[in-house]
Image 1 (cartoon, one colour):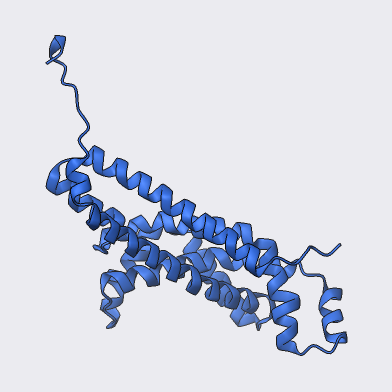
Image 2 (spheres, one colour; image 1 turned 180 degrees about the vertical axis):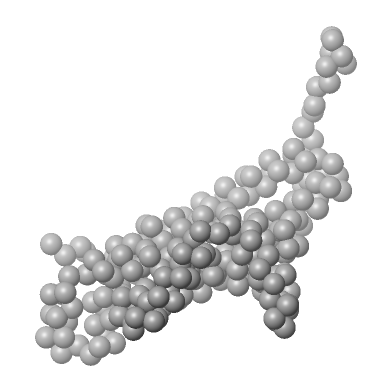
Length: 229
């Protein structure tokens, strides 16, 4: 023991790496939840943005209320409402489906405004030019409106989705076996909290970099045509 009675803590990662497969399982669930929520959330975002821009007045009000409620309440409370509240209405979900539903509802509300801004930025003349070229409504929406709009807002969407993946750690509060929940259980068993959460921090960093790389590939593949001038 050093002078003065101070205890020197020695890091020991051996017990953590012995259970590394458990952490990998939690990381895999985090990735699966995040990826599914991103895809479904984008569908919600596009649908909500179209409803807000082109829908009837009642639909616009519904979308506005949805956005305001979700953006001005904690994600943790939203998860509790889904997991503990829906059973009161007769719909009981297991932790993982409940976590996915809460994540989709949350990210959809934030992404609606991002997608709406992108669609709103498309010049009306560009849309009219699409019709003048003989494109159908669906083709104009897909190629003249949606794709350029998503290209404009893709960086903002990817940032939102990365935030979603990091925020998904909150789903551990309903016992969904994501990386944070698995890490908490492991630290409680081996009392190596510092070591466990150092490893988990690195794993979250790696997952963030992987998602960022995947988004860069998607952008290059889906939006590689040159900017119009």
